[in-house]
Length: 221
Ligand SMILES: C[S@@+](CC[C@H](N)C(=O)[O-])C[C@H]1O[C@@H](n2cnc3c(N)ncnc32)[C@H](O)[C@@H]1O
Picture 1 (cartoon, rainbow, N blue to C red):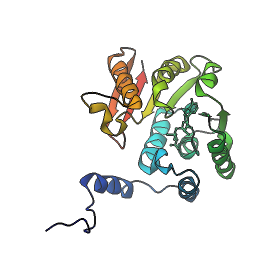
Picture 2 (cartoon, protein in one colour):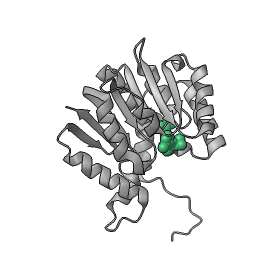
Picture 3 (cartoon, rainbow, N blue to C red):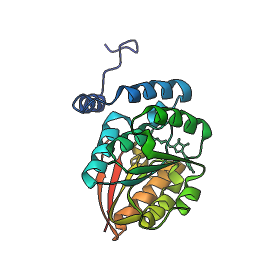
């Protein structure tokens, strides 16, 4: 007979996540240190993209040959460091963060990374930063900040990208809350509307990836 005292069984999803991590290249020790410090200092360790999605981002930047990248949502800098490591010499990443405490942690790790010199951290509301950037000057945009603004970030990303440029968007499954018959959660509503807008947008090619919390991979035509 099962009792509450029995240890929780690992779900197939947990096993798949662990297996995917084990079959993916190792990350630099600095990122493991950042992961530990992010958990300790913020309690929001799960906000970082983590090893598998981070390595995917890195791979996409390399394969696409992106040199000029914008990230919306730095947090403590895990994904920014992943992206920066993939940039060619002379490449740059502009990463946007509104919270000064998270930005401070990120900056301290950027200073310790060999790729840190390629990163410019823009402190303040992301839309204000994006509005200051030039049209068609970027190759790649990563969207990973406040969900109700995703549609505005997408419009700005399309303006900032050259033809053939890539948009990569995180959390487009919102832990499955987008599938509820009646969506009451504000973030889930924003994500569901965003996904539908992208799905119907003839200006882009797209593939929806059920990796982690869902990623939308989009190419501007
Ligand atoms: C999910 S976290 C980003 C995680 C990061 N990409 C990583 O993988 O390490 C989202 C971040 O967006 C930031 N953020 C939320 N609203 C913002 C806004 N309007 N402008 C800039 N940053 C914002 C939050 O403070 C938070 O640090």
